Length: 394
Image (cartoon, rainbow, N blue to C red; front, side, top):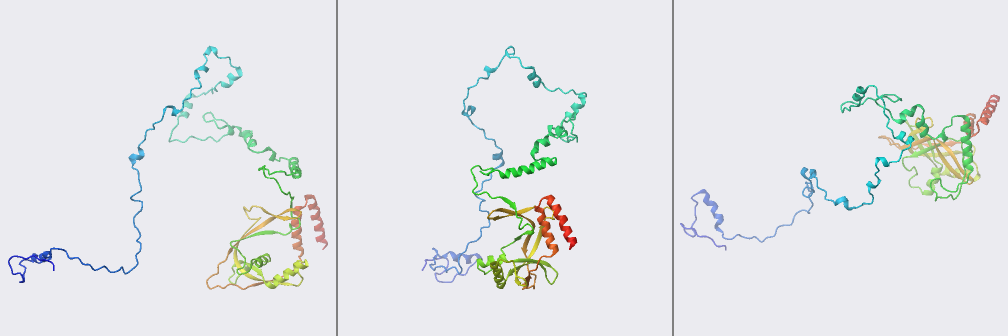
């Protein structure tokens, strides 16, 4: 039991009634020593977690110099002549007295003379020479030299066009027919020269040299470049079969029930692939009265640019064959982006049935028109007259 303090003025065991309201608080001081409780605290009822630190982590370590430190200019203490002692040239040895100087050639004296331009109105020229910060200097629109604002040398020479001829290569200017014919013949002579090394990399040497010629066999067919926004290959099909299907794929512009136009991407069915393989084995393009069925795989929105579009750059592609390299032009570029289905709209299960037919007269005429682009101009005129006569006879 903890010891207690006996108070005077009362029995040891009798009850003490406080005389003042403040005397009731004195009972807390009856214990001489503080009681220590040895019970352990209960476990935390939840797992510990980190609390986000709401303050800047750099506020106690980042150093910001004051304006006094930033504006203070430190004195640079360097050695005399930066430690470099060079005394190899004595400039006094080259100084000559006036009577020792040799006579100068009259032509050199003329070149050293300063151009003294005679100004008739000296007072006006002084006024023009005053530079005012609040006033913009006037620009004189003229190719001639003015009195108070001479133009540059290039503006003076603009009358004779010397700077234009200096910037442009004279070999590229074909002013008449003879120069154009000569430049064209030079390209054939340059093509005959053997190629032994790269034109800009001397250490690169050719392994094989092939002629680059226009593809006369396929030039009559217009070619287009189709760019997909993602891989159009079917999902869940082996890679070998994917390549076979995409090689026979077709795109066609269609219209849905609401009248909205889009591009449909069709893939051949298994039966169509079998028919195409049989045609390839027999060496024919197609069989008469044979129907080839395709199923729609994807829907796309399109953006078309052709040679008639403004800003379209002419592009060509190359085809490597055994006897050389052939090129053809890309008349059209089509960019396809995946078309999103509207709310409540289902994926279409449309099919395309293709049946081949011979080309009509108009299609033959268009192919012949494209082939004539590769023929010489004189023969082109003769052939056009013969074709017109044939059409009139028909």
